[in-house]
Figure 1 (cartoon, rainbow, N blue to C red):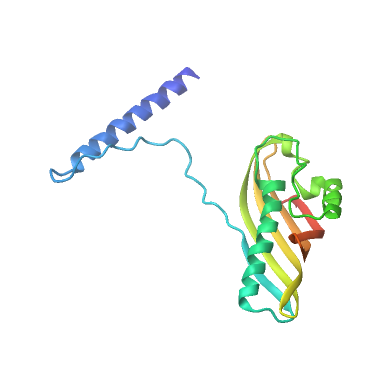
Figure 2: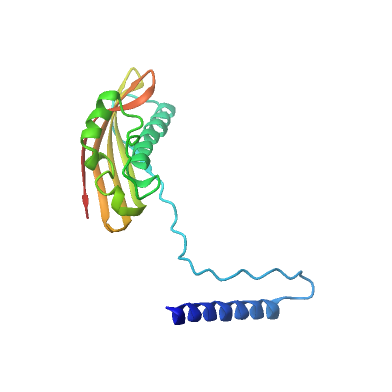
Amino acid sequence: MRSTARRRAGATALALVLTLAAGACSGSDDEPDEPAAAPSSSAPAVPAVETTVVIGKLTGRLPKPERAKVVAAVGAVVDGWTQAAYVGGAYPRRDFADAWPGFTAGARALAKRDRALMSNQDIGHRIDGVELRRSRVVLDVLSVKQRAQAVTARVLVGFRTTGQVERAVRVQGRLYLTHGDGGWQVFGYDMTKGAV
């Protein structure tokens, strides 16, 4: 173990010397010297995955500005749930009591009973991190008098866990949303979750 630490320290020192030497040779008299960046031993950063939200089937007429509002609002509800239930927060953990923001009281009660499906409750205490790999939402919208009244969000979320349980997981299915005084809310769902 000590020899590995010495080798790493020696390799780091050698890389630093070579970096400084290369920087000194490539400078000119007209430009100020810039400090050389220290070499990084960490892995390159993984680009953040953004959720893609698109309109799928549209029943009725809905002007483009209204479509954009539905995409933004429903996308935020779905993202709020996937972040709270699966990919956000600190791991390891056992507490998923707040995993269903944007759900009605009835849907939240059902999701709590289905917590192994509707969150990472089943593996949360055995993982130390989650990396989102894919997030796509297709919205089937029912519009009445050019206003969206109900949405079925077809959801596909893929992520990878690290820690004691290392696996690729896919969450897929439908969330059923309605618009009320509090905005868009999930009132029902038909989801699957499994290792891939």
